[in-house]
Image (cartoon, rainbow, N blue to C red; front, side):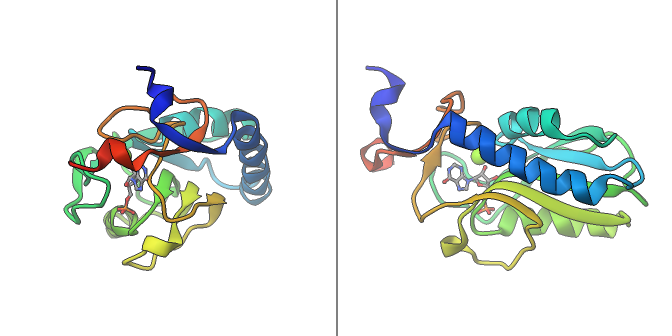
Amino acid sequence: MSMYDDVEKILYSKETIQKRIQEVANEMNALYSDADLPLLICNLKGAFMFLADLVRYLDFRHELDFIETSSYGAGTASSGDVRFLLDVGESIKDRNVIIVEDIVDSGITLSCILERFEARHAQSVRVVALLNKPSRREIEVPIDFCGFVVPNEFVIGYGLDYDQQYRNLPFIGVLKPAVYQGD
Ligand code: IMP
Ligand code: MG
């Protein structure tokens, strides 16, 4: 059976995603044109595809780094226990940091990241998130640039996984509940 059979519906096609990312990049281009070498920090693994497309639309000089966080295990709801599996390679003190996220759901992951970076005295910390699912928020967090507001459904594709799979789908879709029911 194909992995495509597990998709209930497509929310955003690859064309829609590209068009929206270009618009988000333009907002960022306007804000960062004169900034002092911003540092984009991609939160792995989910944001890898978004980062790769986003940076191709940016026209300001910047540097890239990666962190990896994990809170889900194999379920579809945050465990509330955010683990940092990978940290940035260099100091973020006095840097203009832009966190690149795939989706903000409960807000727990992002709030842990923000707390950590603010304690290290970045000059500014902003957030760009491809997806925002405000219906599930448990902690209030700022999102400076956002691609799409998604309904309260578990989404996959374009970097987002269920149990580490489906990240390669070229669109963002809703997973058939039958796939995770029984977990
Ligand atoms: P939060 O801590 O609950 O805000 O969740 C943030 C992380 O959970 C994101 O970086 C995603 O990796 C993952 N996540 C949240 N919602 C979804 C979803 O609908 N599909 C896939 N991953 C999700
Ligand atoms: Mg994930």
